[in-house]
Structure formats: C-alpha cells, structure tokens
Image 1: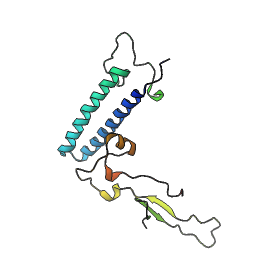
Image 2: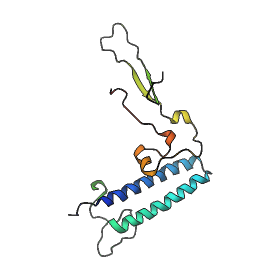
Image 3: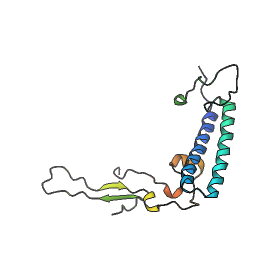
Image 4: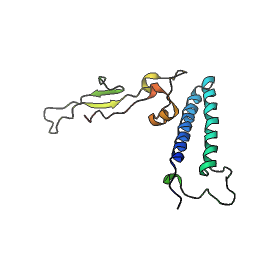
Length: 87
Length: 73
C-alpha cells in the first residue's frame, strides 16, 4: 500500500490549484478584454509558473498530467495509487 | 429595501392576509451580487493573491460576495 502522502504533496498540489485558478480567471477576463496587455503579461507569468510547479511536482511525487513523459521507465506509475479522489 | 449591515442582500416582506393560518414568514432575503452593479469589468481591478483567490472563489476583489445566512441569527 502506498505510504501516506507527505504534507509537502498537499502543499504543492494546493499551490498548483491556486495558480491554475488564477489562470482560469484571467482567461475568462481576457476573452472579453482581448487587448489588456497587462493582463496578458500576468497570464503569461502564471502560465510559466504553473508549468514549472507541475514539472517539479511530477519529478517529486509522480505523474500528475495525462500524456506527460514518465520519470521512471521501469515502472508504470500512472495507474498507481493515489488516484485523484483518494488524495 | 437594502438589508442594512449585510452587503449585496435585499429583503422584502411577503404579504400576509388576515385569514392566513400559517405563522408569518417575516422578512425574506435575496442575493444581489456585485456583478449586477459593476457591468462591464474595467481594467486593473484589485486582485486577491492566488491562494486567497482560490479560497474566495474569485480573483477580483470587487466581485467577491461573502455569503452569510441572513436567517441564522
């Protein structure tokens, strides 16, 4: 059985969630304000940050996103616990 | 009429006839969220931090509407 998840797992996941939420909000805002360059700049900043966080998370805790390269080519971790609803 | 201390809430008193067997409902409240009053969003609205925005459900400070049960006193 997978050992219990470290608090760091939850912290990083929450940060990813927060950054992605900001991205969603900015996308909705930019849909109606297409030439707000300051918002686009902020969107790019958060998009890059989200990518960095996810890469770090996947290196440390295992696969997070579908279709991404796996860190371990001896063991298929994608279908291993914890599944999203078990986290 | 606008409910005094609670923002973005309005209330009304449903009519009650003299022969109404049920106990009076009293004041009823309904929500008037901030987006009704803002219309098209101007640029450079104040923002919450990422974690706070996730908690509050919106990135934009003026659009935040804290729901509090007006019936529970």
